[in-house]
Image (tube, rainbow, N blue to C red; front, top):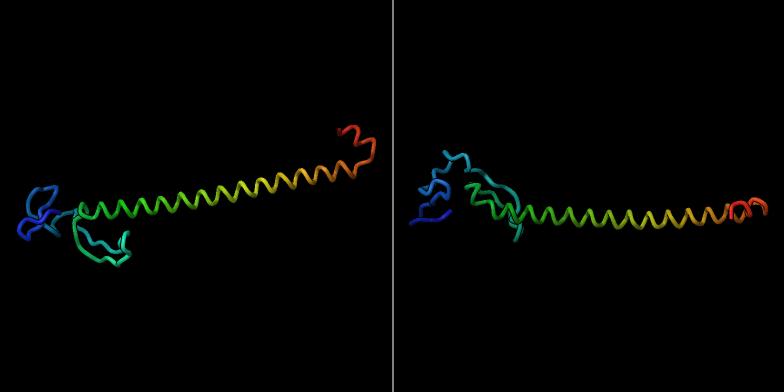
Length: 105
């Protein structure tokens, strides 16, 4: 919100902030997304939007990193499972009787 001679100007009403009478006026508690300081303050939700957007981007980025890590782990496990299946099939073929080996190959 813009300050006009010490008075907050509402970006929606284009006049002095009506504070608690406004539905956009709320209490914000949490951590600042940039410097990590604790926040506990009353203010306009419109005023909080830039900080909340930054926090949302950080959360989305963290989810993306976790999804990538899970995907990499699943790919590694699938490769290991494929190798085990090949080894098992080779053992079955090698332990089969000679006539069965001819049929399999």
